[in-house]
Image 1 (tube, rainbow, N blue to C red):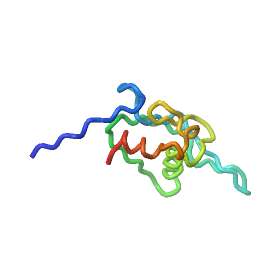
Image 2 (cartoon, rainbow, N blue to C red; image 1 turned 90 degrees about the vertical axis):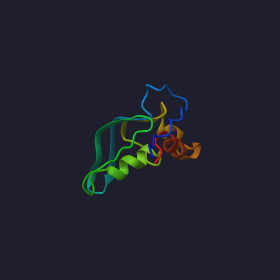
Image 3 (cartoon, rainbow, N blue to C red; image 1 turned 90 degrees about the horizontal axis):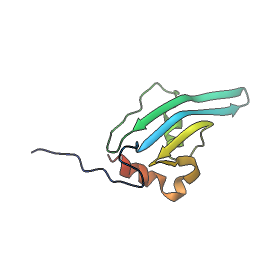
Length: 106
């Protein structure tokens, strides 16, 4: 049996625009020992229907990046957009996680 992927769902953005756009994002946490840079200059574009894995060693910032994409953590610098709308401004309360699932099912 031949299986083909389901068509992507358009949600407020042009087909040419990435579903998820991470542009020069960084996150620095302030600790009692001084600043701790968890993410530095991360950039990523994910198209509709694409499957992406974020890999790296423990402590390299994978979870911090995902929390910022979900709108649960504010980036210290740079921008993250889902369907062309900034994540942090919208936040989880306006359904950003459901929008991520629609853009990138699986």
